Figure (spheres, rainbow, N blue to C red):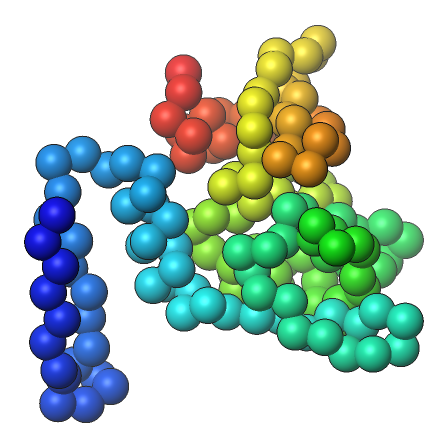
Length: 145
């Protein structure tokens, strides 16, 4: 694969162009990184404010009007609401229920469940239920039918 980098005159003229025979998972990941610019979101843990990179997030859940971000290292609270995070996070994340957003790059496998729902196993071994209203979009993003 040929990689070329050219210097832009200013930030307004910055762009990335990818020419590929097929869109693989590696290319999707590269596009997500470019779009999110290694984005981080502020969370609190034990009184400290931390910046969590979006690529380390497994899923985000809203419980009792509080929003929690789950990473490999643990659970952290954030001030953002789910709809705000959904707008911020972009392509690699998907609303999977009324109270949850999942990082689709952290999904190891999916399995059909009752009532047209899916069960998703994450890389950390946790299982999440994908509500039937979000199944079609998840299948589309994962490239399965």
